[in-house]
Amino acid sequence: MTGQKPFRAAVVGCGAIAPNHVRGILEAGQTLAALCDTDAERARRLCAKFGLSVPVYTDLEALFDRERPDVLHICTPHYLHAPMCCAALRRGVNVLCEKPLGISEEDLRAIEAAEAESTAMLGVCLQNRYEPNFLRLKALSEEEGIAAAFGVVAWRRDADYYASGAWRGKWATEGGGVMINQALHTLDLLQWICGMPQAVTAHLSDDHLQGVIEVEDTATAHFRLPDGRAFQLFATTACTSDFPAQLQVMTRAGHRYFADNVSLCRDGEPLPGEKSAMLGKTVWGSGHCRLIADFYRHLSEGNRFPIDAHEGARVIRLILGMYESAKRGTTVPMTEETR
Image (tube, rainbow, N blue to C red):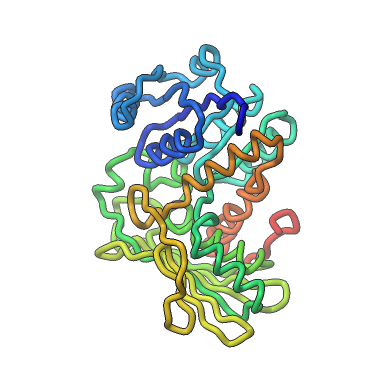
């Protein structure tokens, strides 16, 4: 970005994940122009956390009109992602949206259409693709070929967690449970490394918060690839503690790889590599700043960001397929559009 004026970025939604975006904006050499949240005091606390003094809004349209940002970072509850993405794109404002991109097929189609009609760029924050261990695992898997793979997410989310936001734990506003929130990144890594499946068989349950949440806290899934191979996923938020999300890959070369945010092992032996600098919860990993920097690099060069609406929608369509499979009690094929 040498010699180029910094982009003016705004963040809407000043909850738990917003500090990662503010830090990423600043570390990428961009300008934080404004914050927006329905709770103005929460936005002011975020300003204070970084020693900043920027305008605070409680209405996104007012922010658009007065600040005219170049980029909008969307960190709001899930059900607001699609309408906010579309509103920004219609105004020609570039978007970096937190996961999930949307919570329904209608959401995804609306965003894809808005992106296609806009001069602005959209990116989706699937930051684990930027973790050194997972990047290396993908490269090794491509080099050696994949024989089998599975992922595990074992975290704790209790009643207090769901009480922290009225939108949590509801189909209409969160869009699901462990899969669309906590395990989304692990499923995204599996499809990114292994390829998009052609069918899914899934089972869902609410094992420890009946009466507290409407959605699943535990999920298992079997994904069948076009060439007959498969990968599996187990995810739960019914644990008594948080454990690092894990991927294991068996390659055709006979090696077994284990990867999480902090380590990469081959056949039980650690492989030397870059250490991750954690931001916030350890289970979040450290990919946010890397992804945000890359987003602004693509924007400054006038190039499309690789995790665009269609790419970011892939994992959502897999999750929607899981939900449909569990509802029907049968295997659900993925459409050609999904793949």
